[in-house]
Length: 112
Length: 109
Image (cartoon, rainbow over all chains, first blue to last red; front, side):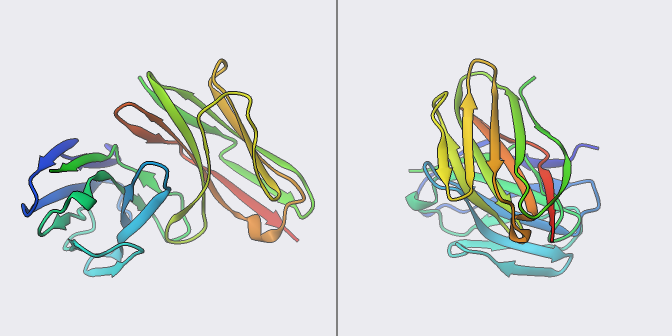
């Protein structure tokens, strides 16, 4: 098993550009989530999904969209990047809402 | 290869017990170690440790880091059923943050 994979590992965007952060897992997990990690702050939940076709907002959803067309993939889209979105983004998956979450390696995004 | 290892993976105690959770790591260019409590949707931040030997405390929870031996412990005294959760350790270096597999703590009444 590859576990949770994320691409790209690093990305630099200009303000206003759009991009998609990819996340995939091969553990047949129903629950997937996206977090951002900022210096001095804990993980903050952006969006999550409890299964294919189902997504919901987390603590900081503004400026981000997600979709879950398959169990394996959970892409995160930035429609119009802003400097405030400079952060490290983690994707995680779990068998269920209260199960151990497996984290991907992270994507370090800089918005200029 | 950089890694973060938590132990035990699972622990069952009774209310009032004291527990110690362990996190050992091997990373280059260490910056910080973070502890989280995960109950439902998202992990809740507990502590961030950057310096050896300085205990961080919050109520019944405390944590300390040993940068020489490359580990941290999370102590919970007088455990309560509400402490039941998965406790995650994460280690940050210059480029990455790596998560351990977590310790599932169950506190029985």
